[in-house]
Amino acid sequence: MTAAGGFTLDAVPWLVVAALVALLVAVADRYFRKKYMYFARIDTSGLIIEPALVPAGDISLNAIVVRPRAVHDGEGGHSGEQLPLVIVEHSWGTSVDSAYIRQYATSIVLGLPCVVLACDLRGHGKSPGDRTDYKRVRDDLKAIVGFGLTLPGIDQNRVGFMGFSTGGSLALTEPYLDARVKAIVAVAAAFNPITNFMRRPRSITGWLFKVLFTATDARRRAAPGEDLASLSPQHAIVPGDAARNRRVFLIHARDDRVVLVDQFEALKEVLGLGPGNYLLLEKGGHAFFGQEMLVLGAALRFFAGFL
Image (cartoon, rainbow, N blue to C red; front, side, top):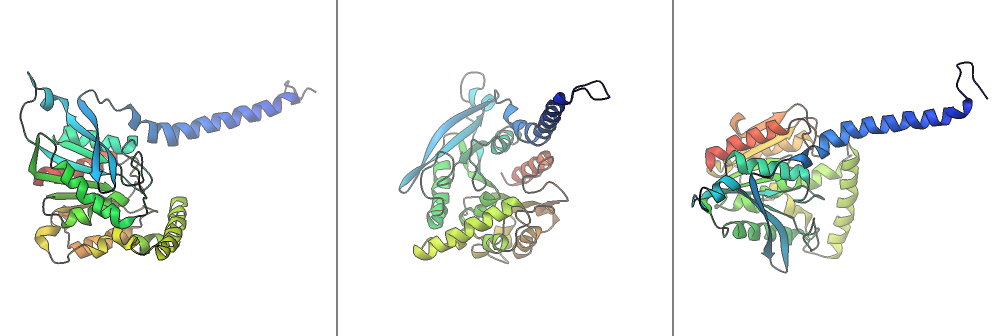
């Protein structure tokens, strides 16, 4: 059958399919290629990236060690220069293989320069173990710092720690209490994860976290000792300890719908931080899409002042 416009009605379904495909391509271009696949195109030819295993009690954690090739190779082998070490920890459910995490790890290496140790948390990525065994997760952090200090070519007196989301909260537990860690950058960290995620969520990710934490809380009651509170900076931070707290730099986005901005405000208050120790962006969400260079620049500036 032919319509007045000169095309057959049989073609209408195909036109609809073509329009849907075009819409899908546009969405994929905007939300995936530009936001996710962009990071996968980073040129790492100026870096040496090596796999590593971090002994952590009953298991070994998967990790990568990233070094600047120019410092490592020099004119005729290793230059002998001792570099700072920055430990990078990912968010819940991701890993060091995430292109989003690798963009920061690799950029920090060249920007300071330094050596980066990025490690899969227990039960994440290629690391075995139970990710809800929170006490051991905190013990793992001690093992990660200890392993980092054994790496060749690093200055043991210049150690930094950078964490994202859950990694940021964890940075404010054991690493915060460890005097060997001279500077901490906590990105999108929660002051109290239970308080943050157990209220009414404002995003799909927030709903998923609430379901997860509800389930793991029931599991904890059945297995005493696995306490979600172990992941909370609220129980580690020492208010009024200016010397310790000035080592901390917070980065957050006001429109973060996963870790709400009141968690940032609580951290800032209990740490007693002034404007020089935080960056609060108006937009960027939980992952800081479109604001990555600001996050990186602020982190590099802070680390450079301590390391």
